[in-house]
Length: 71
Image 1: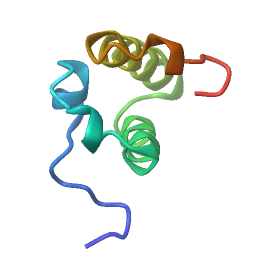
Image 2: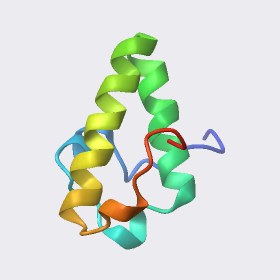
Image 3: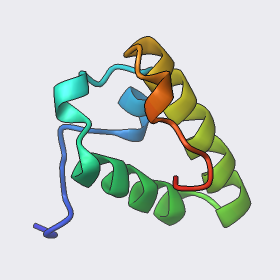
Image 4: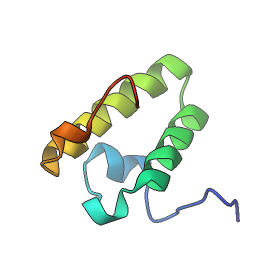
C-alpha cells in the first residue's frame, strides 16, 4: 500500500463534509489535495478541493482555519 494511503477518507466523504475534525489533520489535508490532483484536471481539482474545504471547515465551526492562499 502507498505510504500516502488513508483509505478511510475519500473525496466523496470530503465533499459531503463527512469527516470528523479529529480525522482531518494536516496529513489528511495533504492527502485530499493529492487525491484531487490525481483524479481531476488541475483547474477542476483546485476548485473542487477549495469548495470542499470551505464546506468542511464551516461544518466543523473552524472557518478561521481556512486560508485560501495557504491551502
